[in-house]
Length: 261
Ligand code: DGL
Image (cartoon, rainbow, N blue to C red):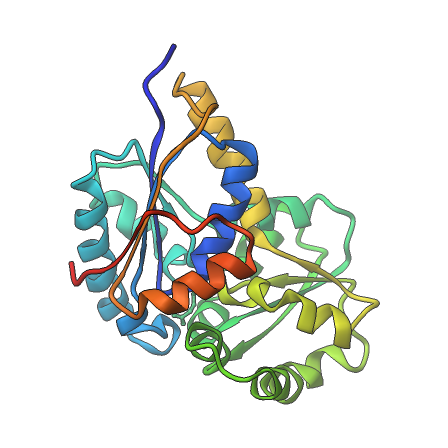
């Protein structure tokens, strides 16, 4: 039997727990060490240099647990993966590339991407999709506030209001057939999107990312069956994580702590 798989997962906040949910469905025996940097959320409104600094700090923290792999659940950070990988010894997995590949091969002709302003501005989704199929039209829209609202547990009406006012112009008329929820915080409120836009297919990129990570763990001969151990750390309020864990139906772990790495 192989060594127990140990996976570091990072996000700017609670959003990356959507990846944890998907990975646990495929690899229930993996040990997962999660860090959500809610004290510095939203990353999507920060500079490239600042996002890189924060991410290196988180990577060093996760590497103290002797992880086999680091998963960048955050779309905003994933747009910088080439720079990050060239300075990091652990293998890194982006959330962007797997779903971009899946969408490019899906037969969709017009694809929407919703994310942070940073993610939309750098255009990684559009580039990766059109590298595979240049005929696909990719339209994107960024929100500067939805991720932080979800992270802080804002009232439903405020979240619905932001979805409507920010994304309505893209989704109300001539909507794309498929829309990538290109920020980890958005799948947490996916039901808000599907209620308002029942004819659009909304994709959670964590689903494809979890498949890629599970496949890699298997190739390495690492053990992912049985009962794994989840530890959740945050620079923010652990109670916010408890609420999201419950919402995502992930058992609340015995380690759920606030730390500043
Ligand atoms: N969770 C991050 C993402 O997937 C964005 C939230 C933020 O701006 O910090 O892009």
